[in-house]
Amino acid sequence: MRCRAERRRDGYLTIDALVALSITVLAVTAAVTLAANAVSRMAQARDRLTAVRVADDLYEQLYTGERPDGRQSGVTEGRSWTYVSSSAATDGTPSVARRLRIVVDRRFGPDLVIEAVVPPAPATASSS
Image: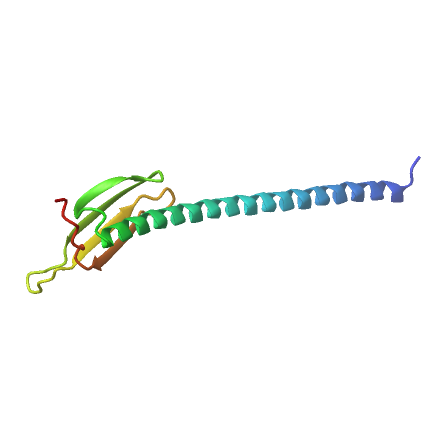
């Protein structure tokens, strides 16, 4: 027959095991949560970078006159985009500058919107 001290110690071993198991579960859960957050933030950053790259290309092409003025839309690198190019002149202020509004679709978060005023489109060489 076991003495009373040995029976008490068995109870403490069970409690020790349960505490250790609980701590291990909490640590694993925290590690998985951190990894999931890191993956999510990387995806958001990649999404934002792709949208910025598409918008930058459109802006440069509009600035240099490679793209026509007006309203255009399309898809680049899997991102849908639209732009509107119009005169920057107002009723009281004549201007030859152009007002641009570029919108690029993002998968995570709101669409990327760029508004700018740029100089008039450069003259293109005649085809004759």
